[in-house]
Length: 62
Image (tube, rainbow, N blue to C red):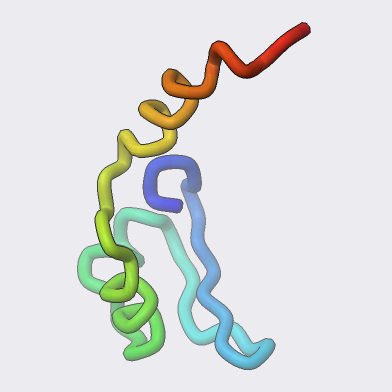
């Protein structure tokens, strides 16, 4: 999310618990649920999507 979004909204049970610009939301997250979500990500590498697309580009046919 951090690599592709300018704004983020964190929802818990259908209610907004935190929202704002991505950079301020992630450094540091203020709400405990946002902290839990971020700590559950095994690896926060912003290049993972680019690497995946490069790996799979040969699978795409036009």
